[in-house]
Amino acid sequence: MPDLLAVYGSPRKGGNSSVLLDYFLEGASRSSYSIDRIFLRDIELFPCTECGRCAKTGSCVIQDDMEPLYDKLLQYERMVLSCPVFFLGPPAVTKAFIDRGQALWIRKYILGIKPGIQGVQKKGFLLSVGGFKGSDNIFACTRSIVKAIYSTCGFKYAGELLFSGIDHIGDIKKRKGVRDIAVKAGYEFVIQNYNIQHL
Image (cartoon, rainbow, N blue to C red; front, side):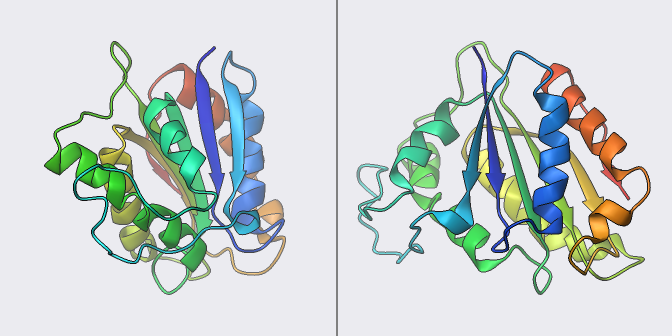
């Protein structure tokens, strides 16, 4: 059975980006994919210290809850990450998770170990919300950062749903049509390519 890694990147339980990911997974669950949900706010996750000890082995020496996630990042066929925008980028817990991908970057670009799965095109998706309304520029940094970790892990950046003007708790639930759009996106992401949308 193919696997989908769903990463909840908000530091707040039940936040808008988490609700958006729940909608997305409602659609994805209609497929044959097994969904593995990771709540970054609930795990022990230390930031990268740039100690350099992964340079020879491609393995991180920090012992925390990131350890089992490395295999999932390399072996799962699909991944979706959802997070809000904090100061034009991902919140600290999401950025720490992404920065710990340094060991995988070493594996790919220094040690030459390709992260793909033979015969399978891995795909990644981004969900994000931001409080500032009227400009997609608020998502530019988050998009670039997520694209970088996806590339490092062998995922093709295959789609995104970005909602601006979402700031207060529960705003995403009040936005007309969001649930239907996200459910459809989740289903289509695991079935076929999905067109990028900014909403």
